[in-house]
Image (cartoon, rainbow, N blue to C red):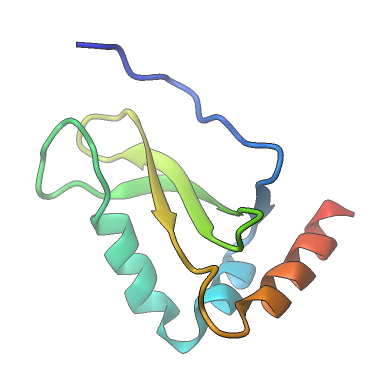
Length: 103
């Protein structure tokens, strides 16, 4: 079996966002959304009780949210890609966040 990387790759178009900005991206349902996303991601370990921990949040050039962290079960890197770019009005929010965080 191939060995997993030990570090995340940050793409040129990804901009790191903070917790408040993550809340803005998801709106009123942010708590339920983040709970769902941090408990449903793919990992080779197969543990059903795993959680994405110590994650950092990014937005892509498609206005999607990417959570990059660690699997709580096997302690290897894990990622959750969330397609938020097609949500209505999200481009205004993400463009504003991107401009603020790039400066």
